[in-house]
Image (tube, rainbow, N blue to C red; front, side, top):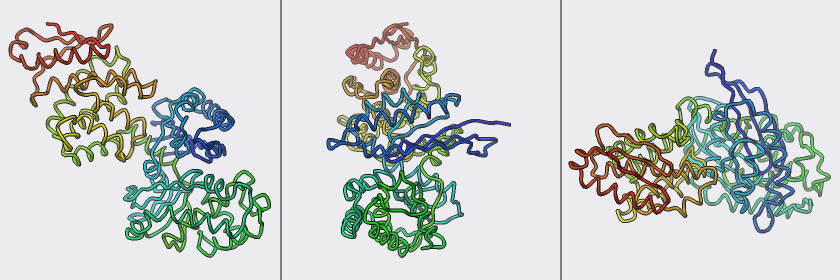
Length: 496
């Protein structure tokens, strides 16, 4: 019996969640769930910086999570941050401390990647064959909306409205009035304007809500007897009437509403009401599955070579009409170089090799814009595109490989890579550069038996004399590469 343990950690704007599961012969079994309402979004000050009190509370939570995952293989753990950590100006400082507390790296994912993972979690929890579904997830700082079928999302969006930030903007003093609710709902409808027509045109068979805000609203509505099943517009209206009658969040006593969620409940209700009004939703059911479940299934897929990032790279290469034959030549050479140096350079045979291969496949996509500075164009495209499956750091690292694959080595830009990633990304950049040089004539020109060794300050590449005599242009290119790398503090030695 094949059994593996996995853990997925979601650092949300309102709550931190961790889910631990075992995969037994391909079947997933949830063995632990831990949740802490950290309310990180409340800790952003007027300058967009995370305050120390909120950071400390978050770190204490991560220390508890870290103790739970200590025995799980590192490759089987993934932790992601969402909207608040996307917004915080000092997120890099916090993430360094968070990594130490958790004992594992934390990735920041884009809003659309968050939406994709949410849809995956819902699809695995509420599955009905060939049903087109609208999924809505209201977090602390953002709301994700997705339309898709089966396990494939078709539309993904993330809007800057959540239960915490809307509550802070309109209900900071706790007062609940008809005017405040109307203004908050109107502001959320304005956020919805950009996507409203597209979503209505796509249509859906069922609307499903996920995560704490919507499941709490559903619980309150059902326990209050306003709906037998699901959330309806009429039930939301009755809920708003109860909020107005209470007059203040402290006086809002409803079955199904916890004390910890009460301060941000009104903001969540207004967001959901705006979504209902904008899209004309008549009924919404709920799902227990959300981001952390989607993260878990995505992680298991990666472990079993079902990685959506590979599909994304294929799509990008085709979209920008990359020369597949040349990309394969460069990839093959880069892989051969990697295998000879990975042990000495402490590179991971799975994650680092995969990133190098993706960089090889995409290194020429900038040619679709212009030949001049095409490495810069390619890096820009990768830095700013929506790349399903990639976290922000992964996306930046991939763009860095493309940016650094030719001409002057961009040391200053490499310094912007996360500190813990700089050394290995630098090594991968060097390997890709050599693979490109050895295939610059768009034919494989490397020696029949390519040999490379690590040295104290770089690499030694073996070039037999007969090969040098037969390939003077490639030798000249390699000598030019020596100069580029030397300026970056890296020594490339050419030997016989």
